[in-house]
Every structure is written in C-alpha cells, then in structure tokens.
Length: 127
Image 1 (tube, rainbow, N blue to C red):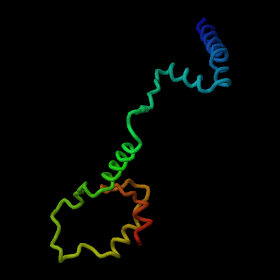
Image 2 (image 1 turned 90 degrees about the horizontal axis):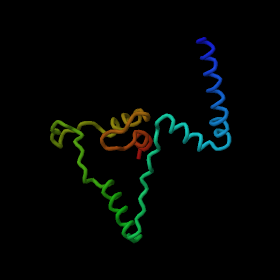
Image 3 (image 1 turned 180 degrees about the vertical axis):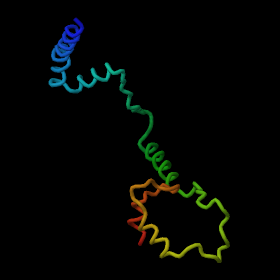
Image 4 (image 1 turned 60 degrees about the vertical axis):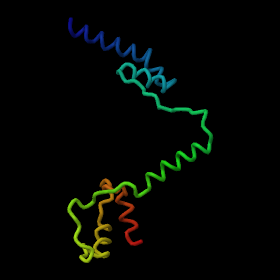
C-alpha cells in the first residue's frame, strides 16, 4: 500500500509539473522563474531607483563632480606605518627594491589600504 501511495504521489507531482510549470517554462521563462522564486519564498527586491525632477542638470553635474573629487583627494590620511618613521636622513629602501616588490605582487589578491588594485601597481611600477 505504501509503495502504491508513493507511486501515485510521484505521478501527480509529474502531472502537475507538466500541466502548470513545464509549459510555463517553455512559453515564458520570466514568469516561470517568478513562480519558482515565489514558491521558494524568495522575493525580488526593488532596484532602488529614484527619479528626481526638481534638480537642474548643472546641480547634478556639480554634485557628481564634488563626490568624485572628494573620493580622489588626499584628504583621507592613511596610517601606513603604525610605528614612528625614522628621521628623513635614513632611507627605508631604494626605488629598485620598491619596483621589484611591486612587480612580484599577486594581482589576484585584494588591494591595500590605499585602494589601488594590485594589477595597476604591478603593471605601472616602471612609470
């Protein structure tokens, strides 16, 4: 009896899939994915798009310019050396040593506190 019930359940699931979901997948994949996501409890979040109508193009351009200028400015101070630096008369290393280290950087690793990608440092270390 149990095997018969399990077999009947499998047949009904297959029938339901072919009748409701299978045809939807072939006819309209977007609706099929929406159905699947709804059944799995996934919800699509809004893209967060905002439309502003009372702002001139000049104000938008100025705001974007200020944002990117601040991001590229030297206003952010990085504490690269946590220990006090030696006096200026002592050299930490020479330029050749720095270039050799930059060439050997692993370009697949993440950037350091300066947010410059390693591939940029490695590629342009001669410049």
